[in-house]
Image 1 (cartoon, rainbow, N blue to C red):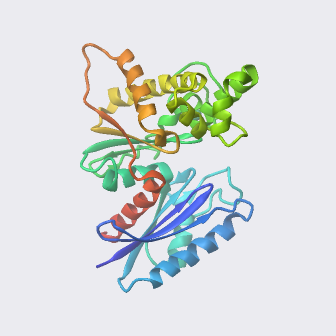
Image 2 (cartoon, rainbow, N blue to C red):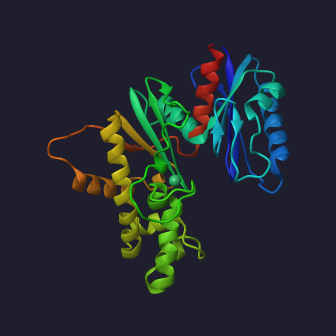
Image 3 (cartoon, helix red, strand yellow):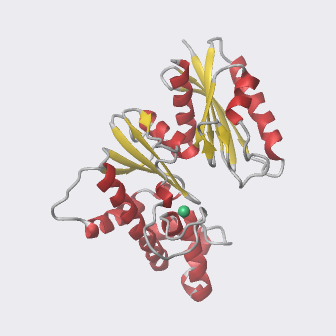
Length: 317
Ligand SMILES: [Zn+2]
């Protein structure tokens, strides 16, 4: 039986894994990303761990899938991220292929996460699925019949940057009114900072649950789950816009399922309940839908599983 390697490079953690032909995880090695140490440090770590995993199996390792936590040019198999020094324009796919001596394929973590959930997570059994990952920003991937929808310029599925309003804060993409600037973890934290400045007496529980410092999206969601009034208000403001974004997705694609991943979605039922309240408010009496909205089941591992799926895909070529 053949095996494949999977690599997930994130801003805080990185993971390398060995998977079998059924997509079962055999071994995973994890580490903390050292942003200061830079690109070459990361490349050395990845190559060493991949070789370590290859040495652990007697089965042939046929291919490697790579997920990068930032913008990727799929055509040239290179990283286009400007946020981490040394990565811009780097042909990561080619580098890994030469380093490991096996075929490799690179994609961004939203697309990889989508493939992971589609094949092994909450999207299993669906024909069409939209994966939306909500963490500091909002990323997404659209899978139809097992394939990612890429579009003419390989830019399909940039749902974080659909304009839901003609106002709002400037988005990370440079645009204005993007869904990401209203409903991401970053937007949640920005609203919380605003509350902390204007009404510090109302944010005590959120601060406590965030570890005593700046309010984090995670701490805020926990406070909202407890019924904290200010946290609930911020959650509702966030999901009100998210519901608009999801309704656009439903109206355009009407997928079998929308899977919400990323740190904010890990709050689960509190997010889904609030979303459904606003989706009900926006509902049309004549245009109905049965698209399900669920949270991801692979947690932080969606991109790693997706990378394995990418590796398996090319190993069959
Ligand atoms: Zn944007």
